[in-house]
Amino acid sequence: MNDYNKLLASLGKLDSLIVAFSGGVDSALLLKAAHDALGENALGVSVVTPYTPTWERQQAKKIAKEIGAAHEVLALPWLPELKSNPTNRCYLCKYTLFEALLSMAKRCGFSHVAEGSNVDDTFEHRPGRKALEELHILTPLLDAGLHKSRIRAISKELGLSTWKKPSFPCLLTRFPHDKTIEEKELRMVEEAETYLISQGYEHIRVRYHDGLARIELPDHELLTLLKTNQFHEIVAHLKSMGFLHVTLDMEGWRPHSNTSNKEYA
Image (cartoon, rainbow, N blue to C red; front, side, top):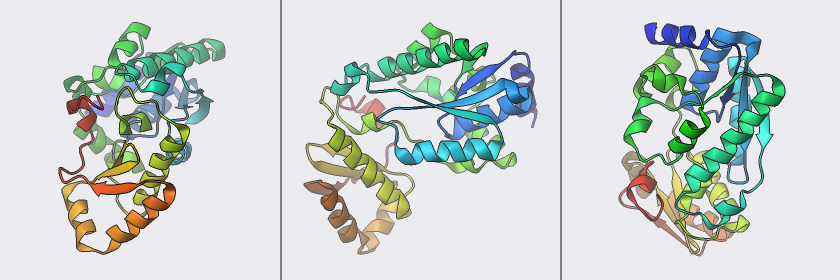
């Protein structure tokens, strides 16, 4: 694994490092490499917010333990500006999150903060990247020239359980821009996605439209759902959560639809 060894060599030049750790594919490989290169001088920190799914927080703790790395949770409250879900929400969120991590690094004696951007991220609309650049956050996977497919392959070789984990952007992406987000609606979306994941639909988005749940699934899972009677059960369950209507998006799962649809961008 020459790519991984190069990554280790690069990280090994640092005195100490905090890794912004969501428990996703990219941050898991980065934390594994940082732990292998720096040992106790590497720390994974999961920043949790009101729009971070509960199951994601739990998985992050589990995965950090699997890696064997030191791990802490940093809780942040609602950023008032995000309540209205503005078009620059990703920039505002990233800046606040990484500013908090930099303060933690200074307080705890860590010299750098890094996160898991990869080469593929540079081809997409990622407003939060501006915040990373302004705050001088390290991006070791990107600097190593690693694409998502290679990160998954290395993760599999290393035995990381995250190697085939789907991507899950924060819950704010399930709502249209410039819509004031109510706590109840946020929890409805979280509960709906958690329920559908428990039913075996791992690649899932539940978009919220004024009481309507618009479900996105990849083609094969969409066909599976339509071939069974489970959809009736799902509709009943989501309505019991408070949704007025439940629909299937026939365009299917679009993990980056919020980048092509300006309503969600």
